Length: 159
View 1: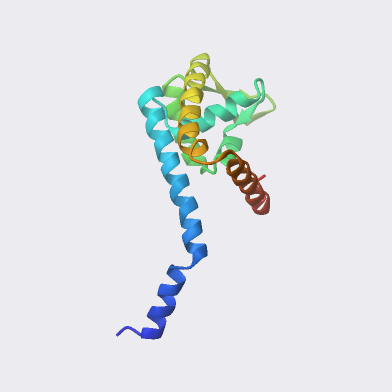
View 2: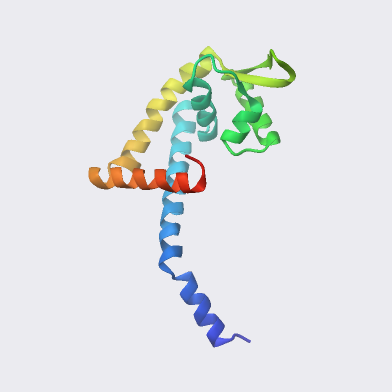
């Protein structure tokens, strides 16, 4: 049997402004990520996660990036990054090379094809982000929003 006081208390908690506001953030972020993934798959034949790997590999040319660091950067498990890099290597986007200083470690680098695909995907990504993340928000609000997101990242130790 339901207890009226407990039901009312649970309903109030479920309708709290904090739950609502955080829900808006998660819903918007999830839908934007899904939209980006759909467009990248359709136009560039890569997933959003593959795009994130290519960002990391193309950001600092010549930098040695291990699978372990990629897993940490993308918050993937070691088996998850291994499977992802397997798929990317099969598609000709990346290659694995042995780490010169540690034979147990594997480095990942973008191939010429990977850089070409990344450049196309970066343009597609920018179009989607502009349309759904930037344009709907007034310029002053956008600056405040991105500033606030940076502060949240700092509070979480991610920035």
